[in-house]
Image (cartoon, rainbow, N blue to C red; front, side, top):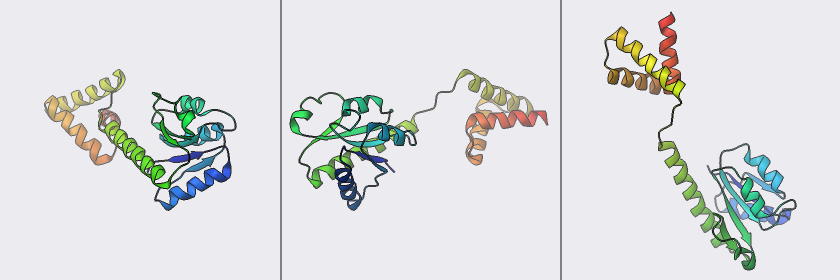
Length: 182
């Protein structure tokens, strides 16, 4: 699920956009009138989309955009002369007045792009720090010496145990080393 926040200076307008989005199958996580409210809500989840007006009660869209965490996109809804100033800053823009079709189509496109990025991020191999690599190496060495395994077999064994238990490879290596003490 993609988290969506509607942030406009007038609460009634924000609620109106929220109801349009809900009627069109989107899940709206919150409605805000200030940038501070948006940032408080965003802290609770990792990424999403903020539909924002040009100026909130406490900050402009550019200030809010600079404060958004990685993985959070912005859809700026403003008049065309404001949007002319908003080029080349990774903000998707829609000009006022809005059509429901344009809003839902643009938001659907943004949701698909965000979902694609999330999938790509999950597929990227995790980088382990030196202590984790040493821990895994030590567990493999123990398996190799006690069970007469090759390094590839020991690594495969750790991976299988990790998948079966639902633990990550580092936690599985710790468990193997704990068994050594018993």
